[in-house]
Length: 178
Image 1 (tube, rainbow, N blue to C red):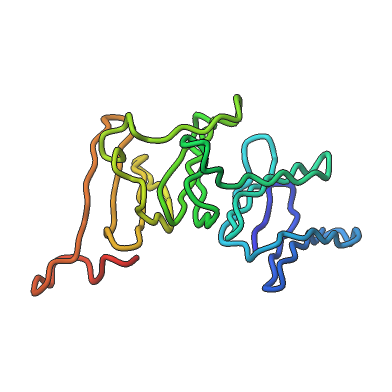
Image 2: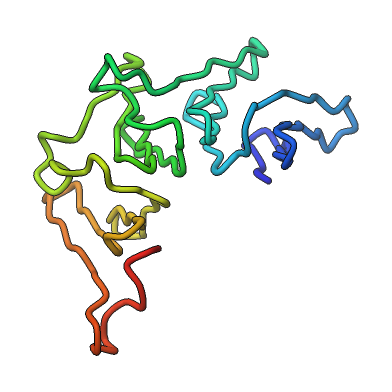
């Protein structure tokens, strides 16, 4: 579940439904997602973004409209995979999207996706499964991956660190599958 800024509680179910529950006893709204919801994000405009196994969903609460964004093989700058696992929005209104086949960023002002080929640490991010994206109190972005450990990226100085499991070294992370 997820609680939006307006106090509504959103619940995704295993049979691909999204319910909006208003704490002031308004009717419960039900929306079909088509797939399990892996992650929620409410953007700065109040839109609700859903990471699903069938792409990215954008729900405009004001218009009661859902837009589905899917992988398009003819668009190399679009999302690289329909299996979207993580969402994060930074202060510049950019949404970072992690899929099981790489990262993309979405400028919500232009609705344009950008691959990360120009950001050196992410140059080879295609075919890497990004599972979770979070930001710490120092502004560092942390990425858990499927097979390539834990990665940190500091947007301020563009520094990047990778933390990998090293066999027989108890001071490293326990697994590269995070």
